[in-house]
Length: 198
Image 1 (cartoon, rainbow, N blue to C red):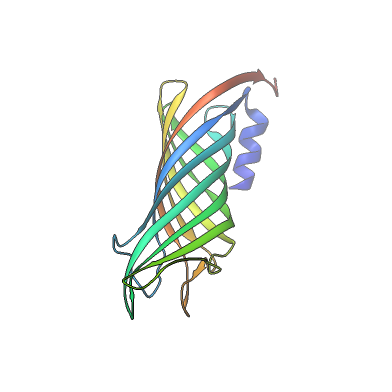
Image 2: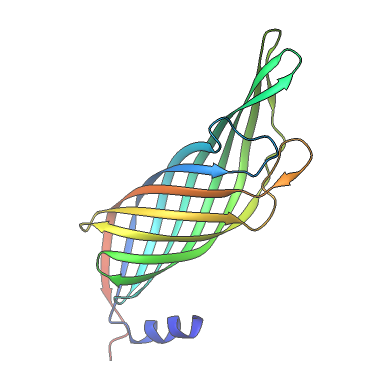
């Protein structure tokens, strides 16, 4: 794959540079032993991205995204009926894109998630308390997805990530996140340069 990337780049006539903003909605399956009331953590966020496209087929995109995940858990504890969690991360996906046409691409790569903060709130008849959730961890994930262009500026982005290491410890057993996300991006700056001329 790396050799194909190098060969294609060497014969590419143009390099397109794109910079813009991207937002997304996220559903996260943590795999914790206590299942969220909605079965998944829900969340979203957004940030900036920068992309390169070499010729017509090969692309590379790097994002910096601030994301949050929230969930409610029904529990059976004395005086406590619900536990709510909120986790925030800085997600940095780096994806290689394979453009099948001007409007559609597959992508895959690696995402580093950096844990920023976690809070856990307990509600019940005799307690309403918020504490720091120290169970969230930094972790890396495999990324796979697709890009659908809606004109030259806007695009839709569907991504699946699977954690390669432990991402959260709720009580005892650590778990690995899986996420499905739908993003909407806008290319605010585009520049096409002719390079590698024969």
